[in-house]
Length: 250
Image 1 (spheres, rainbow, N blue to C red):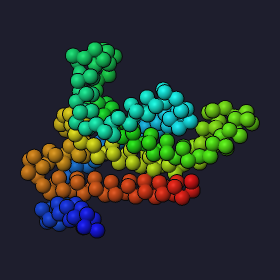
Image 2 (cartoon, rainbow, N blue to C red; image 1 turned 180 degrees about the vertical axis):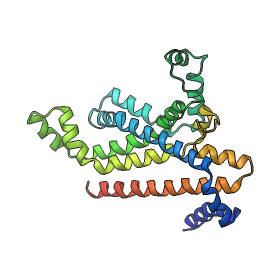
Image 3 (cartoon, one colour; image 1 turned 90 degrees about the vertical axis):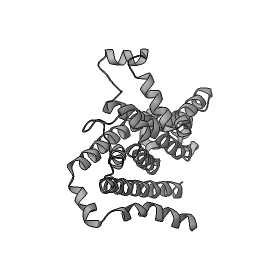
Image 4 (spheres, rainbow, N blue to C red; image 1 turned 45 degrees about the vertical axis):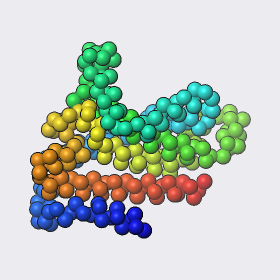
């Protein structure tokens, strides 16, 4: 109870730094909505990539227990224990012009440093473990006898995944997407390390909060923070609803 009260006071305390009139006037600022739109667009792309590569990886981690799956599980979960700043620094160094990997991508016309592509990459690395771990847990809860019976009836691995595993794991899938999306849209440290601050190109909502604060424009920073808090609350609500629903139907 004490922690709940303390957290509520801290989060709500920022709104006492400005008047309601000034706060509402900031919502007419076009730069604010450009930053919000950019964050939405990039995080949506990250979610699609998570969906595309996260489902097969979660299937391997849940149903293929061997040394390779253990190594994949270790590597995919590693970003959870790493500092986002270190992840951003690693991407900055690796994808920069001096590095052979960076040179290769640049020669192909693909740039990650100070571009939206770099933001997508770091947000993908950071949000990916949330999606995979939640979906894997949902896969783990499926009755293996049902899978074995499907195999005896001649169903292929793809048919089992598409017709049995994914429908039974729908709640976990939505919960994983909600959590990974919330994590990617709120990422700041790794994003700024790779993207810098380029208006209308790499200036996402969290970066905009930092910029407005450094300029002393607290009403603008508070307005963006309020939107981010509402987004976090909504996505967390979606996650909790479908996560508990998945647990209840386990």
